[in-house]
Length: 407
Image 1 (cartoon, one colour):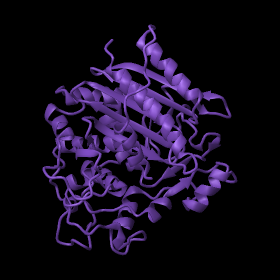
Image 2 (cartoon, rainbow, N blue to C red):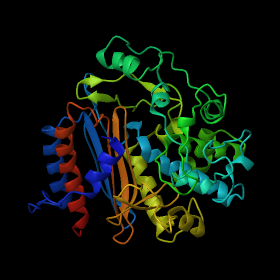
Image 3 (cartoon, rainbow, N blue to C red):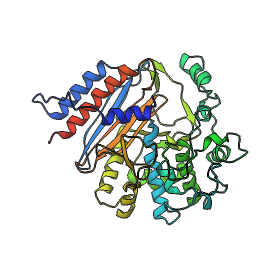
Image 4 (cartoon, rainbow, N blue to C red):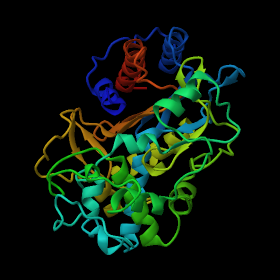
């Protein structure tokens, strides 16, 4: 099962059970319940945030960032957040829109220094709007994506998990990344070393939904081209610093953050530290504390306050882009903003799942409540998925129920 859709299922499809106030404070009740869940779980560590009316109401971490070294997982612990990273790509795109450098209707080939042409639809232009709604026709070729992992130098390569990465994912061991511009050329243009007609779908842009990590990285590269600076530099100066995200950065090399978590394929089975060349689609490293700050800023923007964007910019960021739902849309999803997913239960946000990580960030606009969850564990490990799904269900149920109680 795809991790992304597994998390969507859990976020949306569960009954609200299990949160029972005891007479102590509701925050203490939730801490006790999550502590109990953790002690019986297979999670190395995890952290959660609940935001009410644009303020952090609850924020707590449980377990370990590194089990063998007895390092606690804290609200400042950093780790990759998988596809929740896409929300930051969407925000960066909207910054370039507000700078007058792009629009959602811009044809990407008017910005790129090379041409991206779907061989199945050579006369149909791909626009920025298609990238942010996963309707561009650019597909993820999993055989290519696996080969873009690279284990960092100095990591132990003889563990079972390191060997799995090398053999199953074909991960390299030199820690090197293909520069973003070279990756896009290699994957998207005829004659490129990673090019295949299978990298593109059959439908014209805008007509069919196909979740695409590569299209997300192309969106980030458009930001680079439009702004004239690297994507990590642009996001730091235009997003991270202004919002006040002190422990947030793109994983493009060995982390300099002393709080970085060890990632696990399963509890007690640590993964070597790694990078991935298509980093904008899922390799943002951040903390529970920073995600809480980010969620507050986005909820304020949705509510009509200006901030990192103007009021109009926020309206565009969250505005439903589909007048008619495209073919093959995930039935749990109601619509798309600029990488923000509208779910059918009324939440807007994103889920994430990847190698050694699982995350979600979502809020109810009408209720003005939102949640963050992040863990340093691979949920899709085939031998443990059922048990982990039950444990994750308990955590999400507790958070959803806590949201409903008034202080």
